[in-house]
Every structure is written in structure tokens, then in C-alpha cells.
Image 1: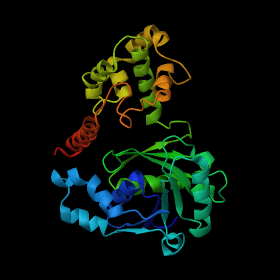
Image 2: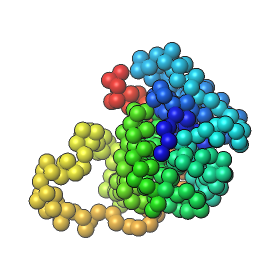
Image 3: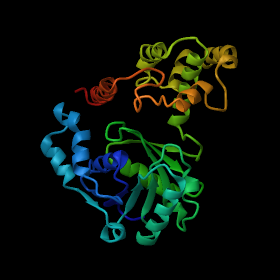
Image 4: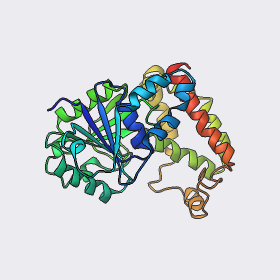
Length: 309
């Protein structure tokens, strides 16, 4: 497998821009971003990294230096495709669009270039089903905001070779990320399966009148949520004991939400147009200022937690 020096990011939306910036943490990499429309990738990255510069995590000079290794183009062919060692697709979450994108890439890129799809839910096996060289294809689920959240889930399809998975893991480590290997292509991969199990129970608690939405969020923030960054769930099981955990599960699991369908309450909010931050109302009401403050505080919290700034 070739040395990876040239990275092509396909799709210049929020995830694509941030993924491109992440890759420049490895000074040996040159990154090209491509999109069907003109996008000011530089301005987008500068805004996304504003708090990193303001808090002294990186300097303005460092940001400029990394931006110099990012090129943007709307060209659908050329050297950035022919010389690509690794391609990260970050287009919309649409199966046919992703398949069409990779079909075109397979015609333009070297046969040993590694192909990665950034998707949080879609099957890498399905996305790559029509490709010829399927062994060099893997899922790479970057978490939003990609320039701050360390985790990237590397997901093997039914055809991904061990060599491909290992090469992607090593590259991500070289860019400062924390890659984890999802050995089987299952819906939700690893972290989203756990996250949405929690969300399902949280929605159910509100739906059944046990507590309101604000109380549910507070209960998470000020209890187990505080220790999760330090103590993972299975570490916690071992800490309290598998015997005690078994006893607790024997009692509580029959009472937990186990529906295989989305909550009727969630459906009613969606159908009423109460879409959360987008519309100013979801489980709670939000002014534009509150929505923006929530996002700013998230970035601020992540920077403090990761960098102590």
C-alpha cells in the first residue's frame, strides 16, 4: 500500500472543511478539498477555529501555516485525483449520491488509493457495493465538530482488508485523532448505538411524564455524565462488579424503553414543525441567542476539557 501524502476531501460542507483542517495536523500531508460549488473553505475553517486561536491552543501563524496546505477546487478531474493517496468523502447522507461519487472517484484515482466514507449511520458495505476494488474502502465516522472531537470510528465493510483498516488508523493517529476500530458493519457503529440508546430512554422519560426535558438533561449533566470522560461504562461495570451489575440489570431492564420504533412524542414534535434549534422549539423553546450560546458553550467546554484552555 502506498505512502499517504496527498489527501483528497470530497465535499466542502461543515464536516469536509473541518476534516481537511484536521488532516493538516500531520505536517507531511497536503490536502485538497473539492466540491461542485465554490466554497470559501479558508474563511469557514478560520471561523470554526476562532476559539482555538482566542484561547491560545494554536496561534494565528500556525493556523495560517496549516491553511497553506489546503487547496480548494471545483475541478472534476486532474492531478488532485490522479495523485490522491487517500480520499475522504464527506457529501450529503444520501446513499445514491455516495455511491455515484465513489464510482466517479474509482475511475479517476489510482487503484491502490484508500477510499473512506464519512458517515454516521450509512453502511460502508452498501456504499461500496458497486466498486471494483472494495478491499481498499472503509468507513471513517468523524464526530461533529470534527476539529475538536478526538474520536473517529474506522468501520470495516464486508470487504475491507486488515491492511486498509490499519493504514487508516495509523494516518488518523498521525493527525492527532483517536481512532477506534468497528470490526463489523452494523447500524450506528459503536458510539451512536450507545448514544441513541440513551436518547431513546431520555425521550421515554419525558413522554411518560416521569420528568420534563430540562430535568432529564440536568440529571445526566450532574451525575454519570460527569464521570463518563474518565470512566467508561464497562470500566464502571468492573468497578462496581459484574455481580452487582447483573443484579441491577435483572431488576431494571424489563422497565426500560425497548421500542424498536421512534417515540410517538418525537414524531409529533417533528410533524408539528418543532425541530429544535432550527425552529426555536423542540423539547424546549430556544431563542436564536440561546441556540448560538449553546453552540459557543459546547466549543468552549470541549476546548477546556481537551486542552485546559
